Every structure is written in C-alpha cells, then in structure tokens.
Length: 318
Image 1 (cartoon, rainbow, N blue to C red):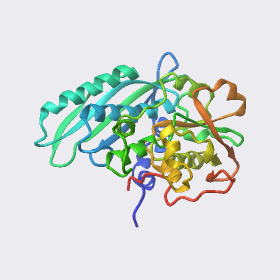
Image 2: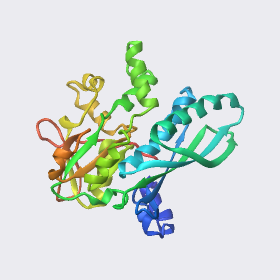
Image 3: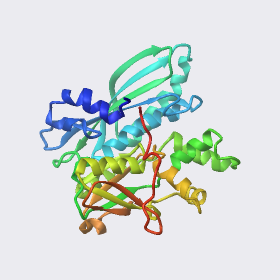
Image 4: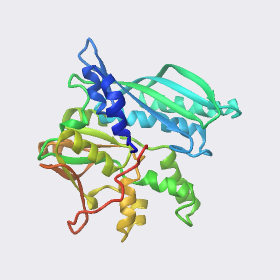
C-alpha cells in the first residue's frame, strides 16, 4: 500500500528524532539550541525540484528566490526571523555553468531582503533535473517556535496575504487559463515564480499572539488539517472570508469548483494561525477566516453555510 509523506516520516524517521526540539518531526522546524540571551535557535529545510516545484524555463534568478522564500515562510510562521543558510546544489550535467550567475543574483537579492546569509553547503552534479535544497536557521523569542499543536477551542483562525494566486500563476504559465493579456499573464506567473510570504515584522505578531501556526504550502485546506490533527481540535473556515486577490475574485466568480482549486492548490507560503479573540485588536496584516471548535478535522463552509467537499485537500508529495 502506498504511503503518504506523513506516514513515511512517522514510520521511518520520527523514531530517529530523539531530541525534544525535534518535536517528533511533527512540525516544519526544529529548535536546535537555546542561546545565552534566552532566544531559541530553530532550523528548517525545504527542497525544490525542476519540473515539480518550478518549470524548466523559469529564470534561475526567480528559482533562487523561491528556494529562499519557501524556507523563510516556515521560519516566519513559527514566530522567528531568518539567520544562517546552507545550500545544496545538484546541477544537471550539460547545463551551462554561466546560468549560475542569475541563480547567485537571486540568492543575494533574497538573502538581503530577508536578513539571511549563506554559511556553507554542498554542490554536485546529476543526470537528472536541477534539484535545490536550503537549510535555513532562525531565531525566536524565549517562548520558542509556535507549533502546529497549540490551537485551542474558541480561537480565531487567521491567514495572511491572499490565497490562490500561485495556483493561478502555474495555470497561466502552462497555458491552462486560455486567453490572457500579456500584463495579466506576467503578473500571475510572477506570483508562481516568486511567492510573497508575510513581511518579516509579522513574525512578531505570531510570536506574541498565535497559539498555533503553519505556513500554507500544500494548500489552505491541507495545512489547516495539519493544525487540526496536531492540536486535537476542529477548524471551521468560511470560504467567503478567505482573502483572494482581484484576479482570484474575478476567476472564481460564480464558480465553486474553481474556488476549491484555489483553496487546495498550494504554493501560497502565507501564514495560517489561530489566536484568542482577545488578540483581535492587536492583529493587523491578516484576515480572520474562521474559528476553532471541539472535534476533529477541517470544515470549509460555503456562503450558505453548507460544508464543501474536496477531491483532495492539497498537494500530495507521494
């Protein structure tokens, strides 16, 4: 029987994660040290593969930026700020090395933006696709990283930014959206190639107010499900409150099926978190989309209050 990503982790790798900071590999980051000033040092690792996470003709400058941002989003969602990075570059044989100029330019641009710096890594070659991995460390306050497992009954559910633009961008890049103006296509494709996580300062909001938090990478529905499972609660989300861009609104107008695609498409790299109602006045830069109740799983309600059904909650790695 085929196993999903999380079953594989639980069976083969979680037994090896014996430190308390690893949290049984149930989260996106590990706390690897407690610093003398009381802050915590956390680490995350994400990989992106040509043909899976980016398209073969994507400019390598934007590929580098995406590599940084898929890791930055994990750090911010835990209430942390990025720090040191380690890069693993698996370069296809026969691909011109001169293309690394653009890749290095993208790394520099995003390291500068997010306050990170490269400290090492590894390079090798392959007969397969371009494969990139970044290990990113970050610093969190004395509370430590905000885990998926802290959601409480009565909490509000919040999400930053807009949802679905990256999925729309992938459709635009592959010609699946039909006729688009050059301006509209370029805008959408740019959101797929270079996602826009929350600003660095939002990590302070998460650290101060969130009970549970996760970055939206596999899809809003899937990642809300990870919070529900880890916390032992149910999350109820009102679809009409999920923030969409103007392009997203136009695309899904009068079409529930298309809305489902945006809610499950993934690659948004926004922060989904829960917080007590008492924090509402202090939370800016996010949209309140639902509530935490007793139970299990995730329910997405349409405008009439009916529970929506989904063929799949999000991207599946296996």
